[in-house]
Image 1 (spheres, rainbow, N blue to C red):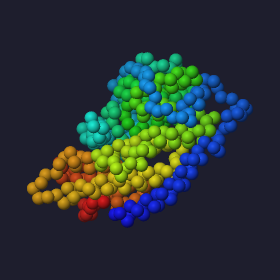
Image 2 (cartoon, one colour):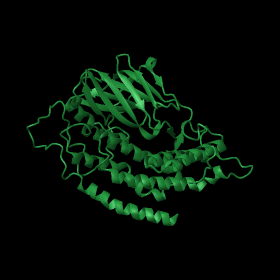
Image 3 (spheres, rainbow, N blue to C red):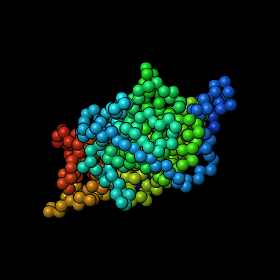
Image 4 (cartoon, one colour):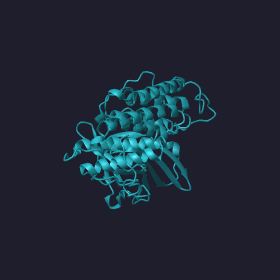
Length: 407
């Protein structure tokens, strides 16, 4: 194991030098449109203050000055996700004709306990409920569409794709995404992309946790005004600063890279650098924060720019998750006669297994390794009397002749 780790570290270090070059070069060369080019004017109702969210000195987190709103849910049009569904999506339509769809790459959801640790939420259903009205929204033209995803506050292993189909042909450059906790607390701007054709407008979000999401048509001053009201949650502050940058064409690619690099430094960098010293019951939080940052990279269409750096972090995280699972794996695979598995410890291990399995799939580790993660989760859940996986080889009865092993 030590030799393997040394080899991985050597390879990772070599690649990291390349990645550092990428980060160091951010903000220098590539440009979508020269800001001094006045031949392509930008509507004053569209262009937010692009300098304010991205400054050389990063003072973060900001002093909170939140705006809270009150949303009313259209419960008669609520939809519930069918767990284990092969479609992996849930869809609904509001009374005014907006269509919402949530596509889940992984439908395992987690709740966070009072200690900040994750546990699998076996009991809650995934729901999608349109919003019928929002009081107190600081946008003069109200909102175009909004939906609440439940259970509120649930965390995801891998970001889900939330789309909205809105009646009407709206100029995408005048639109902004927003989000709020519950039904309106801690309102903040949220990264989203937009397109419009054939009399309809389409919005896309990547979401790593469940709350309220919506689309509004805004003026420049309204974006600037909202930026002056930092939400309480630092992660939401980061979302708000990035939101005006991700879909406005005059933004330099280098500026967007810089904003995403700053977002990484705020929320992920220290967690990744301290992985080896992170207790196993906290490693899943690192996985969660990395995925949250990746959702911003994806919505900004900047995955190629950060590809090397992302892979380094994912491999490092997978290795640490594997080490943590290996520490207690024998309690599932080779239980002591007459000793009942500790549900709390097994529950914690199942969280780690789920993140590891998802990363193994993302990194194309091969069917044998991915299937072993499924089988291990099934064996551990069975040993502790916990619900068994809802999908995959272990759930459908296939592969029963395969022998499960510790990673």
